[in-house]
Amino acid sequence: MTAAIIDGKAFAAGLRARIATEVEALARRGIKPGLAVVLVGEDPASQVYVRSKGRMTVEVGMASFEHRLPDTTPEDELLALIARLNADPAVNGILVQLPLPRHMDEAAVINAIAPEKDVDGFHILNVGLLATGQKAMVPCTPLGCLMLLRDRLGDLAGKRAVVIGRSNIVGKPMAQLLLRDSATVTVAHSRTADLPALCREADILVAAVGRAEFVKGDWIKPGATVIDVGINRTEAGLVGDVDFASALPVAGAITPVPGGVGPMTIACLLANTLTATARANGLTDPEGLTP
Ligand code: NDP
Image 1 (spheres, helix red, strand yellow):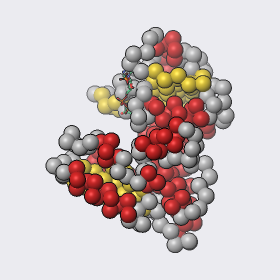
Image 2: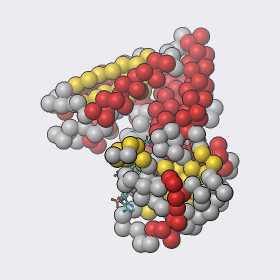
Image 3: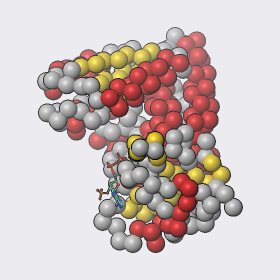
Image 4: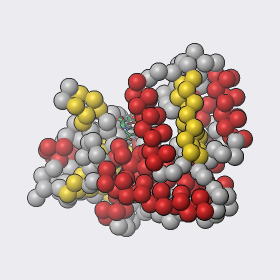
């Protein structure tokens, strides 16, 4: 048996096409969603992300506003920019690209974004809303993983899920989303005892570790659905957190790296911007883009 490959690239393209159709419908009402992306400093990976975010925002018919600030920018100036974007009716979504330069307080900056425009879902209010099962802005990467899982498995109720990683960006919100769908969720991390045995119990295994090819094929329950969030740059190119070659004969389905979770993240950023725009205009949430 060989695992089915979960084609995140194709799924994300379909999602963006649907978003573009919704954006056209909004245009007929005189509404144009706008996404502002703020980049502080010159981090090369961040520059690449910001460029592709801007390009895809425009491709789906939304307005893209890019703000690039030098890495010596005082925090006050960044906060003043966020305050202007919060007040700007043309801006429905605000994303501050992380990581920020070391002299800035990341939590203070994120929590200065108006929660209803926080399309990354990192604001403390959105974290709380998600944790309590209320209408929130949901972090893009785990939202993308959830969409792929539902598409593959349908109802997740009663499935055993193991999430490796407890970051605020991926692991914790992923666990919240799976729990919300009534999976039985375990969150593993660097202090977890006998991780391979734990993973072998999982019908759904999400790896968000940041270590190249960390999860081996013999950690995987035969037939399990494996979502590989990892993006690791190695001499051999981009690889995930799962050892793809040894996982392939065991898993039921698996996301490749690249072409799995990665493309879903930007598509879900656009989905969140659309949702934020609908909410700002008193419209119902677009179908299937929220948990
Ligand atoms: P973090 O470094 O913030 O978190 C990594 C987590 O993995 C931590 O909770 C850590 O545990 C855990 N961990 C580390 N080593 C081990 C170990 N030996 N055994 C078990 N658990 C371990 O990373 P992120 O969550 O931000 O990102 C994870 C990966 O996902 C990275 O490769 C990143 O590049 C990728 N990523 C991909 C995105 C996409 O769009 N596809 C978006 C965001 C991230 P502890 O808490 O105990 O330290």
